[in-house]
Image: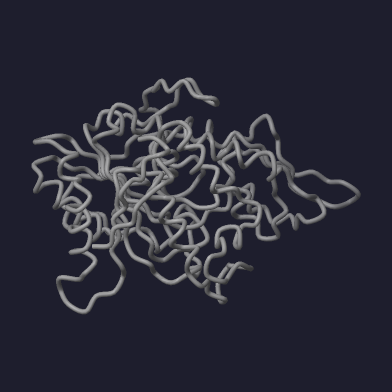
Length: 376
């Protein structure tokens, strides 16, 4: 795919007044319209890349929607399995045992999805392969073995905001979601600091740091947290849980390269199967945060629908445009840019540079930012 080529992005709106207009039926219709059956072959092991949601989060993609995709893959003669990789941060998905327990708690059992669950990078994140990409930030990237070994893949992404990436869709799902812990470290590669005057010494950052990189310091009689930069892996969990926002990075210089590194990892996740990957973005419950956080805030805009494409860049660009075309909810995390046509993601996280992941992904050949929206 070149940047001068407009990719097809298929769209189904959220309204339904009869059975054949249900979201389940729309997923099947999008699967057919986008030609996903041609991406899989008989008996091919096909990864259905989902996000099982952190415990406490309730806006992850419904397992009922995953079942609709599983059914279509089986109709095409392939063998589907649901998969995700373990998290870098401490939480309910940090290892495969806890991860599977959380997935089952969230409804992704066999009785619902009719497919096995496989944690892509193994018990503790050590099952991965290095994939050569020869790009600016990485010559090789680390991709979870179940993703590498799958013959084909359908990627199901909940399109929403993200405090560092700006937004998360197909590109981020490929990049972070298909990488083991070491690969997630590679992508973040940012170092955080604590504003001692803003810190309230609550200890939340320490409780959530996977590397125990936060320590106590006392200056001028005031106790505050500080970052041991030799231990920090840049996962950003401290940033997420700090209520007074005492944790920060150099937003201007760090976030552009962060988005570029994600795009390179996304490229590595599909290398060798570029013609055998299809993508869904679910533009519903468009929250300000990733589904990795153990809560779900109010949505920024109304539900928009579901989009599908074989081009992850075009899909994310279309999703970005569709969200920004909406009027934002005033009773949400959206601080400004409520008007239709304004950027809802910088209206929520003013310092983010989410569009970098689109432009850079296009420049390295992951897809095209040009698209034609086809409503079904």
